[in-house]
Length: 262
Image (cartoon, rainbow, N blue to C red; front, side, top):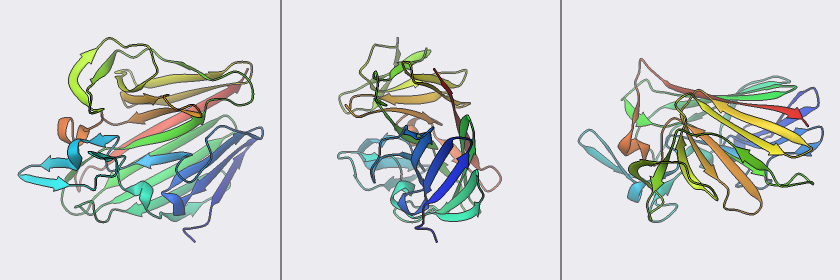
C-alpha cells in the first residue's frame, strides 16, 4: 500500500502524494498546469529530522556526538525521511495523513506524521515529530522545487526578510546576520513575523508560501526550478539552534501555499 501514489483533488487543483518515495508531494497541478519540477528527486520532499546541511555530518546532544552519513560531502543534508517509505494512515478525496517511523542512521526512535490538505485555492502541509522514548534535537522543513517557467515568463520571487544568514565557503551559516543581498541565492533568511514569500509567474499565477516559522531557505541557482523552503531553524540548526522533541512535547510545523490566477 505504501508504494502506491495518492491523488487528492479540490476544484481544479490536484495533488499527487508519493508515500513510497520519501513522503514527498510528487505533483501540484492547478487547472492542469504542473507547478512542481518532475522527477524522483524533486516535487516537494519533507526535511526531517534536520533541514539543510549538518556540518561534517556531526551533531551533539548533551555529551553524545552523533555522525550522520555524508550524503553531500563534506556534510549531511536534508534529513533521512526522504529516503524511506511512508505509510498511509488516512486517505480522503482532498486530504491524506502519512507516517514514518525514524530508523537508523538516525539514533533516536520517533514517529513523523505529515498531513496534506487541499482546497480549491490552497495546499497546507502539517508535520510533527513525536517520541515516546528519549528526547532529541530535531528540525522540520519542506523542500519544494517550483518550476521556474510555466510556459510564459520566468517566475519572480518576492519577499522582505529581516536578515540573511551570512554563508561561509562551506555553504553553512557563519553565525553572522547580514543585510539581505540580491540573488541568485542558496541562502537562509530570517522572517520573524513568519515566512511570507510570493512566487509570481507574470500573467499566469501567483503562489504565496507562508508559515508561522521564521526561517526560509531560498535556492534559485538551478535553471529549471526555484526552491522556497520554510523550516524550523537554519542549516546546521541541530548544532546551533536545536529544537527539542520530548515525550510530552512533539515538534510541529506547517506551511500553506495559496494561489490565484493573474
